Length: 208
Image (cartoon, rainbow, N blue to C red; front, side, top):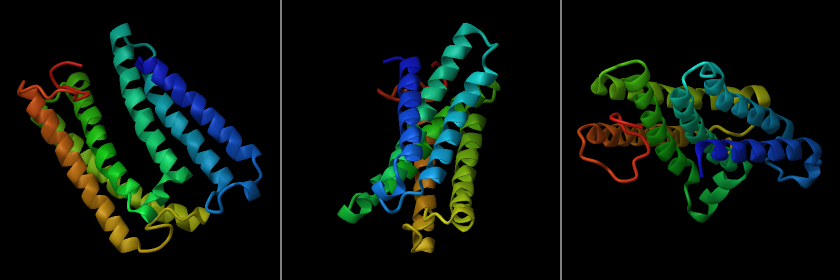
């Protein structure tokens, strides 16, 4: 499946989810849903995925193809987070820490994307690209935790902590998994840069 096909699938699924959240009566949805808010966040997520393509619309055919790959990976990261909001975060009740798994994996993937972009598009050295990518993603993780608290205060949701409880421990471990995931992504990418190829690594600083 190409990046274009992945994007089309994601756009289609988001369109269905947003429509469902807006037309299904709230009484028919799980009680922890905030349908209009969730529809708004889903719409914002779609715009975030679309923005890179907008800025690359006048780039070469090759660069537009690369940007679509960025978009596809970003779309999948956002989609798995959206699935958490729809209910998979509650898997902690059966011992599966979906939230922590996402913090680790998404941080790793975002470091790969950011470092690849800085290396190929901004001509940074491999070391500088990886270090800056680590700083950006870890800082983004901190801002995300702040956003969750503000979101709860303004929109009366329950995203910070464990559905509004145990703020400190949940936030601390979220950030720990952000850092571990980011560092693992940076190490893998830098090792790949030295041409000791790692099978299955989605990005390489040498070639895309």
